[in-house]
Image (cartoon, rainbow, N blue to C red):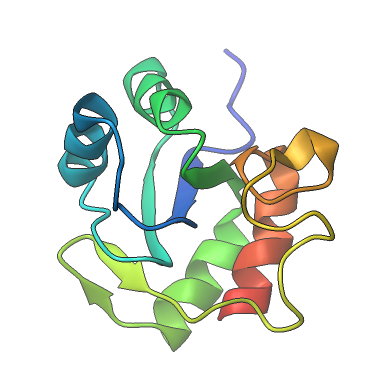
Length: 122
């Protein structure tokens, strides 16, 4: 039986909720992401991936390593299953917070690079 390398997904709300579609806003509220720069850590399963993919225009998400999760737990207080983080030191990527990560922006799926963003925000 193969063991999964990364068992956790982390998501950070990058944009605010003003003017967001009702379905996306409801999904964000189900994930308890109501404030900007709030971070959640969930198990890596198809349900959570689907919810994050639905909100990909407002959040960034990716796999989280166990080391980064331990560092996040030790330095930030968990409130209602989410972490309140500050903006990243040094800012976001070059194209800003309205473009996808694949085109040098900040939104959407970023894979293992999520660990780098979380460390910049701790």
